[in-house]
Amino acid sequence: MKKLLLIGASLALALSTTASFAYDNVTPAEAYNLATSDPDTMILDVRSRYEWGFVGHPAGNKAGFGAELEGKVANIAFNVISGEDLVANQYFIEDVKKLLADKPNMKLITMCRSGSRSKAAAEALEAAGIPVSNMLEGFEGGKDADGYRTVNGWKNNGLPYIAACDGNGYARYKYDLNPAGMMIPAQANW
Image (cartoon, rainbow, N blue to C red; front, top):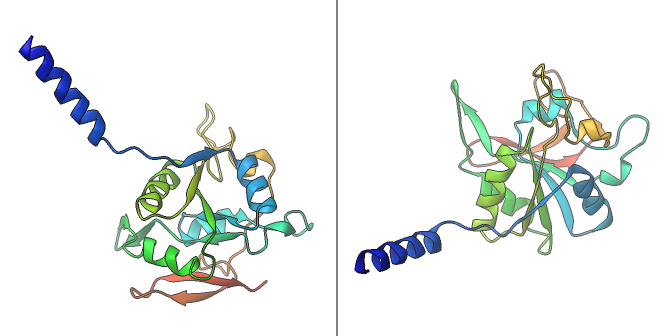
C-alpha cells in the first residue's frame, strides 16, 4: 500500500511540474480573420528572412487581395543561421518586445512553414508573458504522399500572400538592426 501511495504521489508531482501551455491553436483561416478583424491581433511569422522573401508571406498581393493585412504581419526569426548551423535566435524575445513596445494590447499569432517552429515560439512567448496563439499547419502546410507541401496551410487555403525579395533573401522592407546585427523588419516600404 505504501508503494502504491508513493507511486501515486510521484506521478501527481510529475504531472504538476510538467510544462502546461495555455495558448490557443488556430487554423490559417482563423488567423487571417483574427488579424484582419481585430486591431489588437497580428501575425508573427517566425521563419527565416529567406523563407519570408523567397517562399512568400501573408500580405496583399498584386491583384489587391489581402490589402487589409498591411501592418498586421511581422517577421522575426525564431531560429537563425550561424555558420552552417541553425540555432535559436537569442534575441527573439527582445525583438518581439521591441515590436510590441507601442502596442501594449497586441496579441500575436505565431506562424512558420508547417507548424513546429511556431509552436516552440508560442511557448517561448507565453513563458515571457506575451499574449499569443499558434497557427496550425503553417504557411506552406503538410506534405502530400509525394513529399510536396500541398495538403493545407496558408498558401494552400488560398489566403493572400506575396513572394518578393531583392535576390538576397530580403523582402523589400526597411530594416532595423538588433544587438547581434541581425536584420528585423521595421516598416513596409512597397
